[in-house]
Image (cartoon, rainbow, N blue to C red; front, side, top):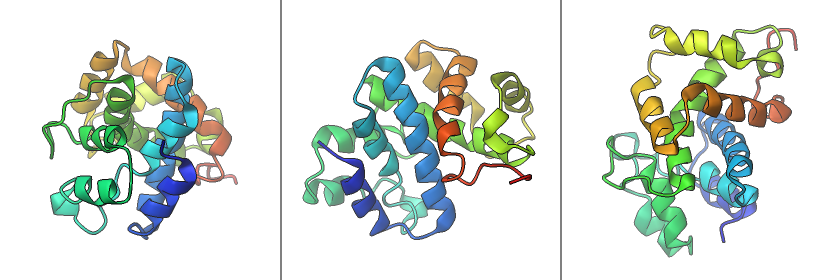
Length: 188
């Protein structure tokens, strides 16, 4: 089973850009909370999440086309590779999310972008971010405009949850790691 240590070793051999490493951490911590919600293995879900953009820095226009063969060759479990591929469903892969892990990763990848943008605007960052404030920004299509809200909604539907519920889980999951993900706010 993929561990966080192994995921970091693999990802960090390919990913050097600070913003991409921060994104991997945001998704990792949010996915840990999603694993807790579903009663699944927290470390495993976090490891898969950290590795999800393995090929993005080197191949942004061919994202996930340089992932499967490479990660399988590194001994990553095929189910974990499939989960990683599924987060690009309908965008750059045809691997449909089926498990709660896959559906969560599909959803959380985009969702954390809006959470991160919200937190960066606040004096106390993510530490006091509430779902109500997040939802206001989520409804504002001009805010974090590159984050695909329709994709987030589709992912939430797959999970049988509404956006606010998933956002609440992710926000709470990210709060303890505010310093590591650089979301302590403007007063820090």
